[in-house]
Image (cartoon, rainbow, N blue to C red; front, side):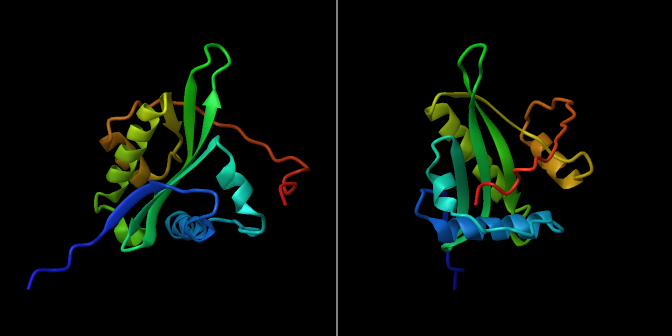
Length: 159
């Protein structure tokens, strides 16, 4: 008997899909562990999901989210181009090296082309060898940049 084929769906989340958004956070938890997110899920995600500048894509296998990305559209001041910063990109460890991440990135590239986004970029921790190997395998431009950040007193003002 042949094994039952699996159903894989790659799609953008809509504002009312809080269950899938929480499943995506579970994927991030599993993939990025240890990930210090002590106040996770304490705000109304519908506002973020409804923001047209926010993009969340998920990969579902048999109805369960196993991979996904979050991204933010940016408008370039100098020329008005639309670019996207991929903020998080992850595949659940149980599904890594199965081709799902490649499928997700290809689907997102199609979305960008179809929506007039001229450039997409992301960052990866320099010690995350798996992520670096994955992004290099996609033939992406590798740009050496150092990111700096700071916290503000209004860190939790989105609640």
